[in-house]
Image 1 (tube, rainbow, N blue to C red):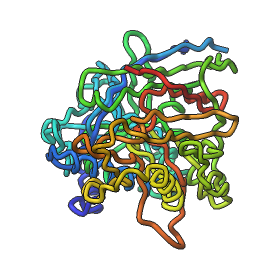
Image 2 (cartoon, rainbow, N blue to C red):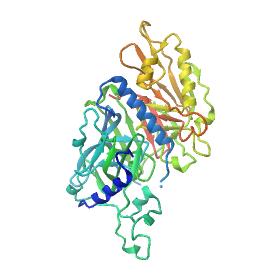
Image 3 (tube, rainbow, N blue to C red):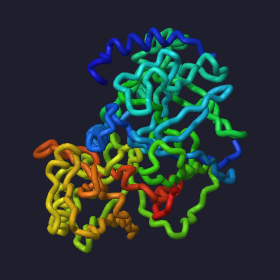
Image 4 (cartoon, rainbow, N blue to C red):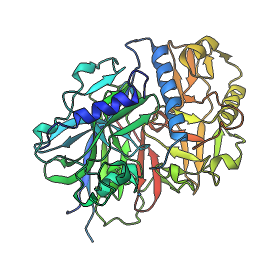
Length: 468
């Protein structure tokens, strides 16, 4: 949490705010998905915007890499639009409550709790992003819903966030009179790289018009946030995630290009519910198995196994131990829609970037742009005519190949004379630098791919598509 929001003041604020009043056939759910960039200042300087996104991606990588642990109907689809935004993520619109209140949520496969900005007292610090007025962030109003209720300390869903010993933290819930305990579940505080949020847990109706309602969905009612101008819908692997609570067989999305940020252009996200899933693969998709990290601290994430990385026709000599987590859980690759740029640990990044430098030796380095954008390597391509950039490919366990389109890993920065590699790393070197996933596959590299999380068959599928 930012120093402007001390933890003890935050908890006191939540306790005071806790006094506000609260009043199975399977489907496919379809929602719209849109891109969004969190600009951490009101600056329209493209170098500053890129630097903010690069910094956010690295900060989120640090958060994910040092994660702490916290557990016969025919199937059909629910569909919802997915929109791109200028703050680095993609949002869906979801409706909660009775009558339903509709809000936008950042779609995040790297976390599990869903939460919305809540009550008229909602406070978001450092949220003055372009096109965002912190005083006018849409919020959920519990007093206007007849179906919401606070989660009790003895409710099993409270354990999803706080573990089986949560009752010991609740007054009058662990003694001889605990049978009569009416204490609410403790307030939550969640960190997202540079951002954070805190509030109280609710049970509320999640509504997919016109006829599908999921009752008693666990959702966070956030009272305070830092650098979080919109709520988050968690698609991770923990019990509190949307896929777990809705018992999804699979979910899929297709991320439109970042050039459509903050426009009305969207694509669809599909949610397949029910128990009637089969082993049928979609023609044209490459598949690779998900696997579980041996360290419970990282069970929330979707791990896949990269076998090799190619730059042009040259295999980058990344040690195999980097691609598979060891007994301590460090290493491996996760797929994370909440990260903007793909992150690679410094030893991996240096091998990849040096191979690009070698194969693009005809271009001079744009060091000044690197310093102000936070991206590297950057190359000056003026006067060279047609750009000659080697292809970048990931080969996965099972034989699936992800050959990235050029726009997914190199981008023009500033004017037309400089291009930069859109992959980030940290400054970590030496002992202790390696922790958690070595590679985090962000949403920038997933643009114009159809992506499928087949949960019933424990596999990840993908294929190039024009998502717009």
